[in-house]
Length: 344
Image (cartoon, rainbow, N blue to C red; front, top):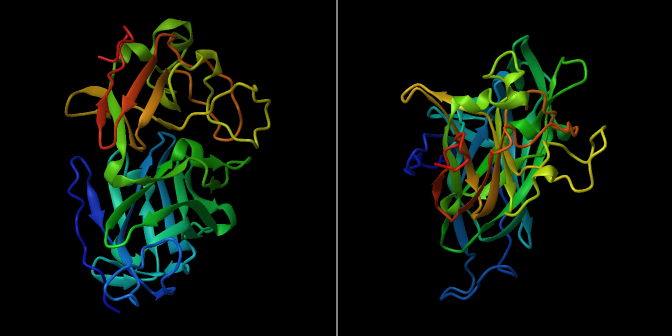
């Protein structure tokens, strides 16, 4: 089996570590609906190439989130499924890929499939088959130690992708750990769900980021009441403009054990500030976003934001920390969060 060549993503600020994937089993359907069959050789099957990376928005509560991927399955629509179950890592073939999500925050990513030729068409889902339930495979390390990590039915079923004929496509699986990672009731293990995992066309994705004034971590009654001003700070991103501040909600799902207000708006994404040693300041970044209109909100009181239950804490906090931004495809928008609330 010939492994695909490994390349490093050249996009600015992306620290891509190249892993290549060999196609263990590919079933190619004949030319049919969903792609163009017009060519000089009418019997040929149109193909395109896929590069797939993994990135995340990390959490302060954990130091490692290791996911062992056994298979990547592309579910075809009008074309056969593609199953990738042999990978090349460090110049050697392996049956699995082990990824510590915490190592690829912001714009950094790990390439797990590199320029793989596929039948052109629509793949309705990207399915990650996970080796889980055992600390020898997938696990989380928190302040108490190493704990097993489990996925829903040992797999994550994610949104699909499209591959055009004769073109190269780059997609990123963006794990919002503040939404997708949860601890079980007794704290002995963790659950990883597809909630909050975005599948984004990397070539046209956008990002927003900037610095955060440290004064915001302790300004106002809510923030100043914290014992540690550096704990519990998160930046939330919501779809759209002209949103009612009172409707902006923390992370929650339809499985919430607490009552969710009818008008509550769940965030699309969130991140925690990181201290930038180079500039001696606190920064944030939310990466791999589709182009569009967004509203940013800072909360200094998000320490107990449960990924499933509606918690109902104040957003934004401080109250002036609400920003409307618009990002175009490929943009890296800058919005510095200041006491004045002016995005400067």
